Image 1: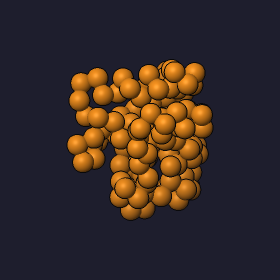
Image 2: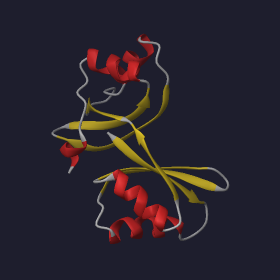
Image 3: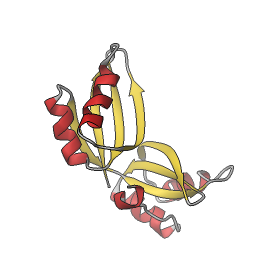
Length: 136
């Protein structure tokens, strides 16, 4: 699935503008993660139409791109995420970043940016991938 990645200036009002641009375009966000540095933040957004969303926020003055990620169902129990990282470690796959969000039918959802080998290792370990249409 594709994720919208937006570089946001680290100053008051820029997150509001980003969310407003998406809302005005009727693009629904299913997950939102923000990592920040001194000068800017990186917003990672799972939304209805990431390609159109990238165009919308670019037109609003933001730098945006789409990135392929894997979203998997994880047991919504203490330690449920451990198996994910154990499978990736066993397959010698690095994780660029990961974040959890919401729940779907009693399972937490985890977005992971890793190699194709990592995605295959997760499938082999029994983790079910979630498609964008499952979130809408």
